[in-house]
Amino acid sequence: MSEELRKLEKEVKKTKRLASEQAMVLHDLIEDRLPDGYGELMAIAQATYDACKAWDEANQKLIAAQTEAA
Image (cartoon, rainbow, N blue to C red; front, side):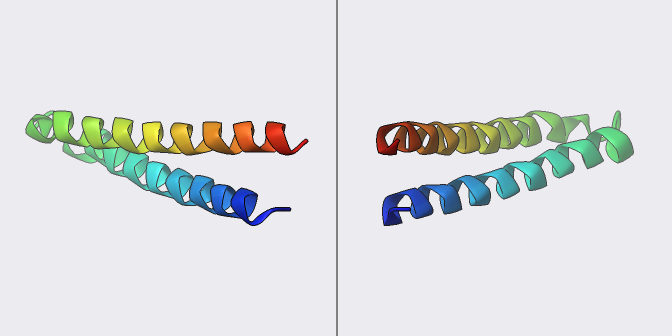
């Protein structure tokens, strides 16, 4: 496996972990702090969206690189 593919795989794992952590923050808000914590909802939802989008972009790069290497 090339160094580039290893880097991309590492980035996918990192961004997936960050997205999962952010999803837990959103889950905790929903489970524990709503409706009182509604003021936090937009910022946490945006951060969760951004983290998931970062994972998706990294994953798409990995898939493209794997396709090229095949």
